[in-house]
Image (cartoon, rainbow, N blue to C red):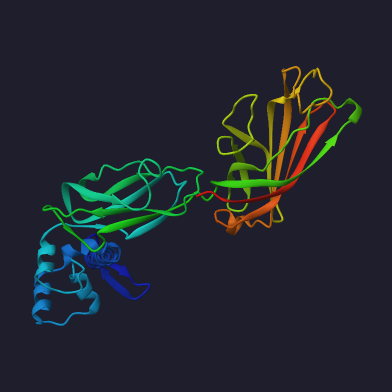
Length: 368
């Protein structure tokens, strides 16, 4: 019974074990070939295209489907000719895709190059595009060692909070005697600007000030400040739909600085965005010769000006800026003229209980 028939009388059939094995073998073979056909990359199909098929197509001896003709056009020039026969015999290098879109925050991005045949060679490529090496991405060497039928070029992307708009990195394969170039000879990476936090510099002009002074006039000593039109240079950092932070650049601002610490930048105390109003608040200290801790004179004589005691007094300044009708989603990186209001509160002007207020209008634009 081991090599004989198996009685399947309940169904009325007899099967030989050898026949069952043969049927299973052919079924597995059929499924293997089907899987191979479905999964093999188009580039690797060049090895399965008979040279005679290409010659017959060139000479018009046989008729082929459009799909088959497209597969035989190995150099992707739209014409079947002797060059395709040459490509059949040589390894063909081609990018897996013509391009890719990535976010600036991705970290590392791999670009894949496929070969129609396994090869051991050093592949060379050029790097172009609008992105800047070592600022937007780590500089590439321009070559990579291939040992097999594919290789990757890893790109290390550098993320920052400077708004630059979308930029590109273009990789192009360099021809070689060791391989031919396929259809995808270049790959362009579109580098999307940081979607979570990008910034830009803005210039604001503060003008049309009005001055109000709080405190007891009988105890006011020293001299009220004079505020001219001022320019405030501010770097604002945004997310996609909100404001993240703001920094006042002392070097680019006129008459606004922390003279107590001589800091080059002044961070915001608070930032907010609500119902189209962008508000930024900066607090900093100044040491002013216009104000003295113990003035030795009570009144100013223009014919004989004197500040009396020259001990500088520390004043606390709070600059509040409100930009009106601002749409973060569409206007944060445009040259649209910004408008709003500002106020500067300076405490400790005449004595600890006296505060000066300056209010006015502001206009601003993005600095290019």
